[in-house]
Length: 359
Image 1 (tube, helix red, strand yellow):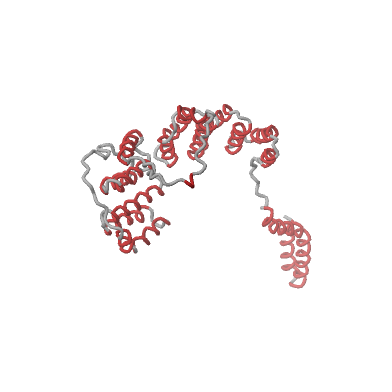
Image 2 (cartoon, helix red, strand yellow):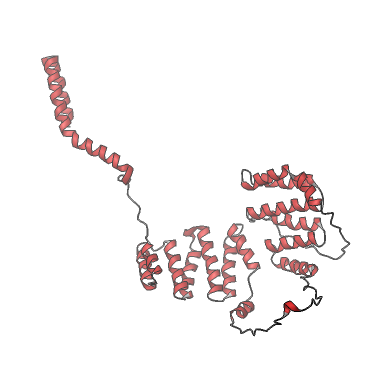
């Protein structure tokens, strides 16, 4: 207000008394205004410059601090660390990091699995934490139930929670894979027993003995392994590892490119399949098309599907680079001779048991 009054007074003096007095009045007004505004302008400039280092007057959001708890854990002060974590959780009761840290201390430092289970079940069931964190909590619960509780049934229940709650996601796919390879309770109990194995003393002069002509122990029967994999896949049709192994047997033992490619195509059609698995399946199909079918054009089309499915990715760039040298690759692979395909009339496929693609 004072600035406005001084400005009007200078105008009146200029009009009434002429330019000379008006100029004098204006200079006096400017001097007074400068004295009045100098502190505010200086403070404003100083605040503006200091904001580059301090963040200005923006309010800093409070976050929990767990460094003190970590330091106490490193010193072996478990109770002190728990007290620090709980202190932070009193201020931030729903903090995911703090709750996970508390659960980990309970199970890993105090062998209190029940308390850890209660926390993880809470995190896994609360939708506010989002699908990734929920799934991570259930996965961790499965690990701890197996490792500390020797509870295969409990681990299976936790993994089934992920499969049921997050279908069609990568977390759901991983849960399915783990369920397919989860050890039964009997095996877990057997491994947990501390059995004493008596050491058998062998011959001490083995290096001086003549060769006995004994052949090395035979490996697993591919036909039997294939039958077991077929049976396994009927129960766990989305098991990536088992289906890749079965495709390998069809290719390497039976020389059946069609059956091998069929298994691999089933993997590529699963909507929840991670990109790295799809890329591995398509590359393996291209290998078979070159090795068994000597069909370079088909291999090029297969590798082209990687670029179409994952454009501008590292996998796409690798696939396109491989396409340029497929001719040389085919010659190199075929240099060792053509694999003879025998006559196999037995049923070695998953007739009618293809996993249904979800799209």
